[in-house]
Length: 299
Image 1 (cartoon, rainbow, N blue to C red):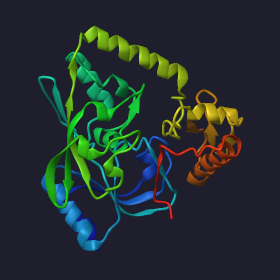
Image 2: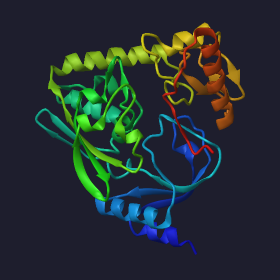
Image 3: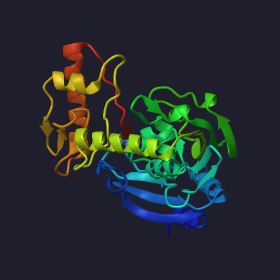
Image 4: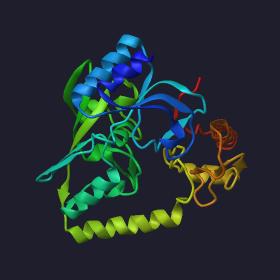
């Protein structure tokens, strides 16, 4: 009898032994022991109490668009908000959205209401929570520029914290240092603009994305952060790794800051290709390429 499973079922919808590969855009990862979908804030508190009492490892996952999971089993709890915590509320120029909302969907809804600020996010395949965690961005814009407050669950309390307390910077937030804090919602400040102007910008960026990114294979988006004053793709191209393949993982010949899963890549193949690139870039340019993708469940 699985007492932990029985306890979790009191607070959330639960799936057992679900592959992480089905929860990430990279389509890589071993099985997670428990995957829970809380429906209420009471459920969240109950789940966290079970985690603490049993000292169970856990991970909050959105759309898994920035995750490289190992192929090992994860003997813990994966918490997902995208099934039930996906409500949104527009109030004038303010948008309040729960952590499980698709950021692409939000950008479209904001456009239809003539509200600008999320155009940069119209092609990011992530949830609000994940985008806050990573301070996701594109086209020299990011989440930090539109966030007023973030609703977090920390120390068994639900509270709104300010943009300043989130310690945002390039692909960084305070939440990366505090995995025990759950991002539950955000309050965004948007700006009125003509609907057609917003739509035209989103359309042009969509066309640019289709033309420049390998969208026909699983990937985690940009693998490396851009070093200050340079572009990761240029450095990878410079070491001759455009199109480089290791097992089922390949550096895209369309955009070489994308490593794509072309044929059932293992986690180790993917990670080994990342580490090869870092080594070669260091040798040639004396630059430390830092990953944007997050490693999860690696020993």
